[in-house]
Image (cartoon, rainbow, N blue to C red; front, side):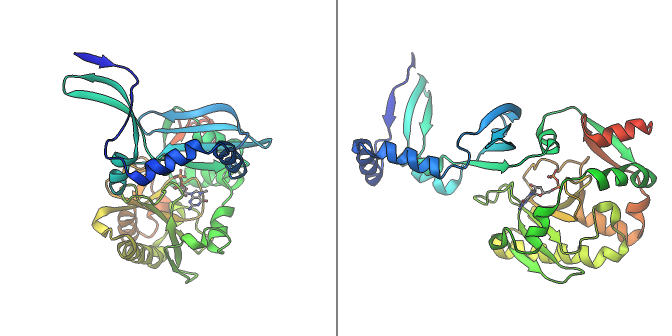
Length: 330
Ligand code: M7G
């Protein structure tokens, strides 16, 4: 027999300390007001006004929102984080459940875990430029094939005038930001780099491990600038990056995909280190180049990335797409 309804149940063996704490908070007349005041002062998003939802995904459990924060344009990315195995005991023992329906051996619930297990990873870009807003807007994409000559005549002038600021990269290299997050640094100005967690990774679980190695040199924009002269830099990043990740996280090189984006969003050479099993956005064949392939291609031909055609996707409203169209390349 089917039974539906919104019956609220506690797990029978709910941890006593949590129950006592919950009761104390419920009975304290000031606690609601205090909590509200506290959250307002600790909440830099208070008063955010949504203009539009740029993109959302029920499957990825995220939402990209454009709006105004203190009269400035802002993009906020909200993302539900994965469930971690080490929190299961607390989830089972410390949650409240509402029964949705029961049928034979099947039942579904709305489970409310303890507040600290109910976090949402939140990324704020403020002030956001029009380019940021467009970057996150869901759009039709087109594959472009760029010859070496197209790069020099179409792409390079475009990125020189239009690309995102890499101030955040310089802040990292100069230890003005995220210094405490650095996992490894080789300070050599020629072959050195800084390895740190990508801000897409909340570092709570290894399944979606994502670090970036940012080179100290400031004269390499992207894959296109690489020649055999950069092999010592690339092999150094590959070797020391993998060693540091093994040492810090216990993840072996055989469980990593190490790649560069072309086109990247930020034109200062950086390399992505991702858990092999994680389908990171942008790790598909149309966007990512394995570092090991890049090294071998340069060993075989120093000018490989200067002369070869490279394919990449562009979103409908990206200025670079119009440039390729104007040049009759699409
Ligand atoms: P990309 O290959 O240029 O392009 O990667 P994508 O953004 O289209 O992937 C740049 C990487 O740097 C991305 O994975 C970003 O998540 C990451 N990233 C961007 N910003 C602004 C920061 C930041 O301020 N700190 C850190 N740690 N990572 C960032």
